[in-house]
Image 1: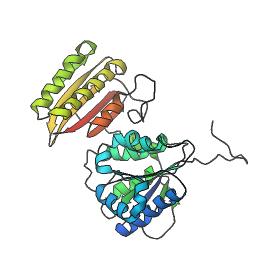
Image 2 (image 1 turned 120 degrees about the vertical axis):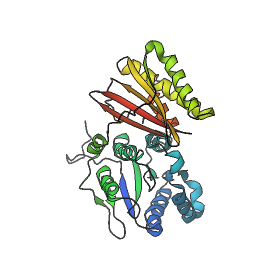
Image 3 (image 1 turned 90 degrees about the vertical axis):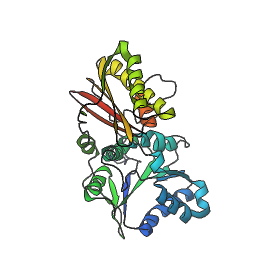
Image 4 (image 1 turned 90 degrees about the horizontal axis):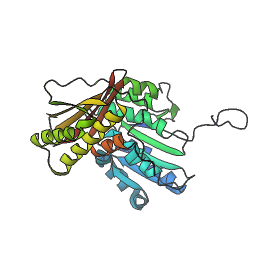
Amino acid sequence: MSAVAEHGAAAPDPFVHPALFYRDEREYLDGTVPFVREGLAAGEPVAVAVPGDRLRLVREALGDDAEAVRLLDMREAGRNPGRIIPGVLRSFADAQPAGRRVRIIGEPIWAGRSAAEYPACVQHEALINTAFQGRAVTVLCPYDVGSLPEPVLADAHATHPVVIPAGPGPARDSAAYAPDAVVARYNEPLPLVPDAPAFPFAAESLTRARHFATDEGRRLGLTGVTLEDLALATAELTTNSVVHGGGSGVLRVWGEGGHVLCEVRDRGRLTDPLAGRRPPVRDRRGGRGLLMVNLIADLVRMHTGDEGTTVRCWFAR
């Protein structure tokens, strides 16, 4: 049941999610630094998670005030867009005192994001609205209009209820706001990769599936912690398939460019768009498999539909 204001109108959602469009460093700082300082002046916890070059600009402009701000390089913390909500945004917001508004600057999309990464980025931006609905949180998302192509900027209008145009001008409601449609549109099928080594698995072959993945990963150049991460992701995904995806599936592992890819296909269907993007619930067992995969992989892409679900993970080699 939605809250109702005194005169019968629906109470506004305390969550605020504007897109900030900027053309140069001056506009970037004009849009971000006052946002940070206003939060600090109001006693609000503030975090800034943006690419390293932008992070340096903000840190220098804030001077001594930077010591009171949580600063994160999004190229590292958010390399996999699927980990940004649980590992960056919720991690910071959930640690703050109850009832206090939280301010975060998050810039998950920049020139240089790959074609494989982008669908996960835009789905992330759309899902922020669901992840923080009803919470006193403001997430400001900068977009570089000089380096990002027009379709990316159009998607920003669809994933943000409020937009702040580049240059002078007030914030305004986005007429194109449609986050659920964006999530559905980027639920793109992941085509089968010809000749990728495959291992069909069921409950009795989960251990052999993990060994198959580590053997292939080692052959393709993974070592140390990254090879262990591949083994853990394989274990989590194949177990999910057995428990929730019809009891069986097919595991594939192959090399592509500078990465080793691990993919699991099964007959299940994901109905929760935030699956794998929620922090773990204390004292509750289970439900952490996809989250764990998001936290350790360099990129995770998912497709789900009536025919089943595919989860594909990238690990740098």
